[in-house]
Amino acid sequence: MLIAMFSVVTMVVLLSVRGCSNDGDGSSGSVSSAGAARSGATVDPTDGSAADDGSSDESFSDKSGSGRVRSQSASRSMFKAAMPAPAQPERDLTAQASAALAGVFSGARYSVSVVDLSNAGTLVDIDSSQVFASASTYKLFVAHSMVTAVELGEMTWDSPLNGMTLQQCLTTMIVDSDNECPKAWLMRDNGAGYDKVTQQANALGAKNTTLHYLDVRTTSADLALILTKLYRGEIWNDDDRDMVIGLMKRQQYRSGIPAGIGGNGTVADKVGFRDSYLHDAGIVYSGKGDYAFVIMTSGSSWTAIANASAALYQLL
Image (cartoon, rainbow, N blue to C red; front, side):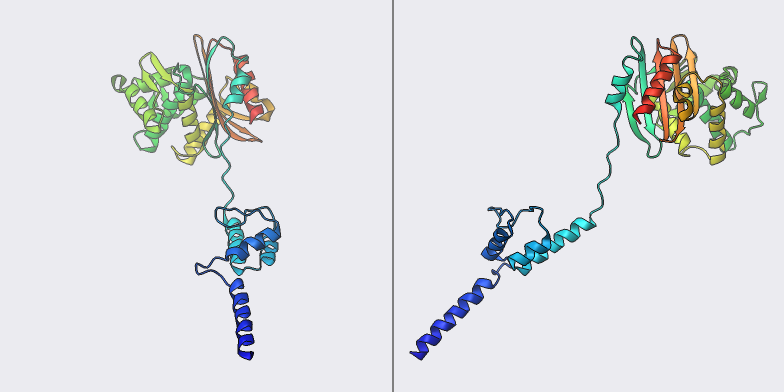
């Protein structure tokens, strides 16, 4: 009788211990599911684990009574805490800009590029690869060629060009939009300057910019590119960059982007106007940040470009 009673007690104890122990694979088995059910969590029948119901890990672990569940929950919390915040996607204001400018440029052909100069990210791209006759905006690429020649030691700022120094030529080309100095630069070596400046522009990444005699073409994307590289110091030394930007701030034709930005900031730009073409390409320094604005048009007006610039600024 005593032996039988001892056997029964032993079996009860063994069964109790087994019910509280883990399975051979280390999982908590039915106890985990029961603990999850008691905690109010939803149980996924496909894997026996509790879905995240927003309850705290501590509450879930205490009610389940499973060290395995506590460890997994703590690990998940630590992993979430260690994960970096997701990168903010670049803003794309193209759709909003297109809607805002449709009436401004009604009946005109136009192209717009806006770049956030803090990260070189494009914010607005309205037909930015559309090729236009460049008018005088090509002088930005000529300026790049001139500065490069000086930095490479091929010329100095005192070298003669078109009856003045190279420095004087660069200044009047940007500030007054003089045509004779850039022509003299391009016609050097029997006109080889056209091909050389084209190659230099293409090497920057301005792939749709071409300079031929009486036929110079570019895009708003290419102009935005050189402005971005200029601003970010990626093409010249700091002194030359600051010098050229200073000239652009002084350029005298300010009815386009500068008029549209008004008191909201300062604009360093280069305009182009020829026949039906009116263009403006500039760096906008403002309280909202610094941006490259390029607006190229055919059949429009400076007032429209100013209004477009104001509308674009409001979107930033």
